[in-house]
Image 1 (tube, rainbow, N blue to C red):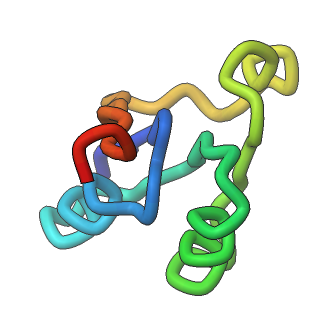
Image 2 (cartoon, rainbow, N blue to C red):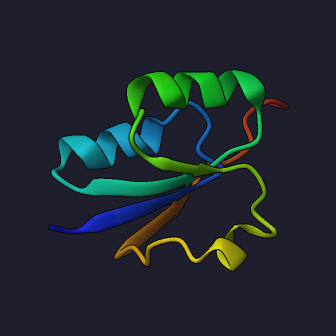
Length: 76
């Protein structure tokens, strides 16, 4: 099974797409409190990090695919 790591996860749009394609998300990086609550609700067992600058020091699982969300706040 392929695995996925999610940077700037937002509310998990990419994660949902990968999940539906049969690819398991192993970790998410997001700092927005509202987005973190949404991620926790939909993916309660996935490891989450809040700082993209330091999460690698915690030795997350190495995924096959890494995605990164585009900051949409200025455009929404």
